[in-house]
Length: 284
Length: 284
Image (cartoon, rainbow over all chains, first blue to last red; front, side):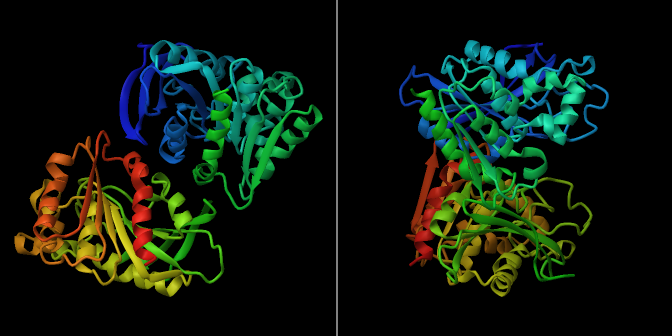
């Protein structure tokens, strides 16, 4: 049970390196993998700010690294990318792999309250364990300068984690996020199972509910949403979040991108804007 | 047995579209898939020149489309990308899936001479059937302006197909190509099985042999090779091709890229240079 991360692969890209690590997570009670993209070092001893990327349903720590092309802009801007996995794995909890939108690959970046899913503590893993582990093991990273982004379920994760930890992150952005999980089928299924029936508890993990409490933001929230995304109407509903932001004057740039779907082709097209959005906040 | 291509998926990217098609190939005797990336149209009725991409061992028509990020430069340059599969599939020839470097996913872009592998005619598929099919079905493509590129086994395919068809392609480039298959284990295994024991026949599909015959080139050959590629010494040996080019004064730009491996992370890093190399030749 090695909590210190072990490097399991390394590939050069845009002058820097994609590296994959494995470690035992005490928070989750299982072995986890994550990726870091280290930009090239122009000068020794310069520390890179970090951008966390939270992936969507069914993803691992690999999808963003192999498909987004984010390393190109990250290399140029000198921002390290941190891509964790999306749930605990290998625990063999009964039913954990029965559906693609719950259990394995579907941690929803919360701390489960129900005994059966007690290992599902991706919120604490992303907010507490992972930053601490990076700080201790990678002197080339400046974890005090951090921002957060994500896609779909990971967009929900990025928004909620940001709003609840405005002191920890400089900026947030999201692609096609689940902005109001208490009111969509994906969120209702996950929250019922992980958190129980009390809907007041659910609001702690719902960006549209949280924005009314936490809206003293240092940076504009950037969201891109594909216009031909098949999940737009029933699951994502960005207009709910837009309305909630308007009510409290929270700065939001919501861009509807006509013709784009829910895939990494959409993410790759606009990722440069997101990296640049975060680089600006991280370098202030 | 529909020889006309049917669209099976479509995703917008960088203003254009990745589209996947399925059709029955009379050349190969089975159903095949391929991808086209159509750049955005600034003006109606402008036809796009085409760049064929040939993938490496184990790949399908998907790897390049999901991992290379080539669409970014292709969108900017107005070049369509054509990504075929790497072998016939679904024929159930005995032993076709026994090894990762022969049979399914390993067509080597040749026309097999051995009866058992008679469907393995990826050379004719890429050089004849596919261009004809594109010309007949996609009026937005100008197939008379074509270039060719590829990776590893597909780099071998691109180089040999280009040299044998200097009238059909404006330019060639390759990432980590197998340049001298008659002298490396991958090539020897494939050629023995597909072509038989007569080594004179093998030379017809070996870029290092072919360059002595076909060296009146309109454009410089561009090759990128990763310095930390684990296949460099035993399988790829670009210096063999470099020597052969020097002997006949064939224009070659061979770039050794220190620290890069054999993966799509390497390809993504340098693909813009390749797209720009081809765009220049295609627009003359």
